[in-house]
Amino acid sequence: MTRIKRSTVFVLLAVLLLAGVAVFFFTRGKPDAKPSDSAKAAAEARPTLTVTVAAPQSSELDVTLAANGNVAAWQEAIVGSESNGLRLAEVRVNVGDVVKRGQVLATFSPETIQADVAQARASVAEARATAADAAGNAARARTLAQTGALSQQQINQYQTAEQTARARVQAAEAALAAQQVRGRNTQVLAPDDGVISGRAATVGSVVAAGTELFRLIRQGRLEWRAEVTSSELGRIAIGMPATIISASGAEVTGKVRSIAPTVDPQTRNALVYVDIPNVLANTGVKAGMFARGEFRLGRSAASTVPQAAIVPRDGFNHLMLLQQDNRVVQQKVETGRRVGERVEIKTRLPEGARVVVQGAGFLNDGDLVRVVNAPAANPPAAASAPAPAPAASSAGAPK
Image (cartoon, rainbow, N blue to C red; front, side, top):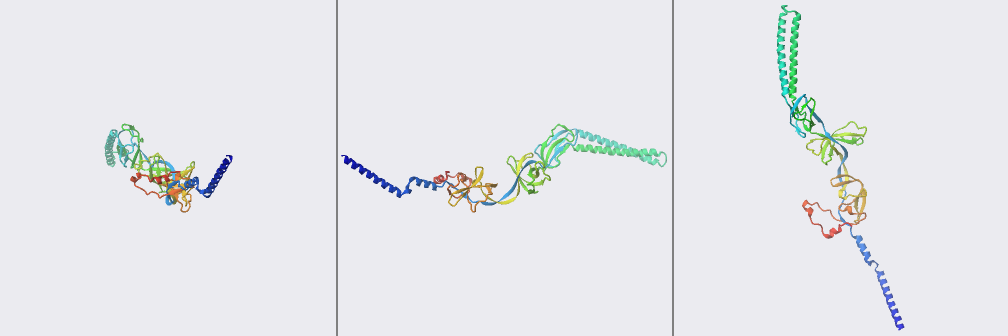
């Protein structure tokens, strides 16, 4: 019985040994058939994202010079009263009204002036009557001078009285003219075309001569007083166009009118005066505002890419460059001017470079991508079209 058990054990050991040898040789002949290796290879060959690419374009962009400054009236006229002690009877304009040269802005009560004019006319009539009497006496005295009835002294007195009476007539006429001028000053007239920017006139108030009643922006013109450093001043010329952007975001276009002949010794900045015509049309720009702007110095060639291709990371801007094997390489770039949806790239890119546009922000250096053509511009109604097929959308999901 013991011999039978031993022989059975030996047989089982032999069978197990033969099975182990068979498995060894079978697995040695097919080492690449491991499920884990095949899955890893398949994962490595799968694209990370479906993207669109574009080549940099050469464009002509404006060369600009940025500056800041205040907006002010080109010239602000102060309209005051020329008469003294008159009562304001009517105010015909208000702040913001457009007025023409010679238009009546306000009127004073004329009763006092009319009385003074009547009194001056009476004085003229009295002076003329006195002058006529003196002239008659002088004429008779000259006639009697040949007869010797009057002495030469008496004759001289009559002639002097005649000249004095004439002078009094002229003085009375001058006083009448002054009162008539006061009568015309009962109407406050606009000195020029423009826009009323301030009003101090109040109906019923009695004002003194020279009191300010209105402020007028002459010809409705504003100006931007831009501060430019002395090193950049030589790049600006009279007549150069400029774009002014107010705090509200409103943009207006002006033109350089003049450049200050001196530079501030403290700030080393000079003022450049830019005309902003038609204050009423440029409702977003008001006198007293602080505004920024740009002087358009000219145009120059530049290499641009779509703004969506710029990837900001770690405080720098990057582009994802597509390689021949459909992998991307991250390159740090320096950006410049922006025009619409395109950005200037100052860094030199490789010849024939293609940059990732759609999906660039989801990629890392070395990622494998699938490239598709950029979708054509669709009308607004097509923006709500159904999503692409599930296979394409799953391929475009980030890793």
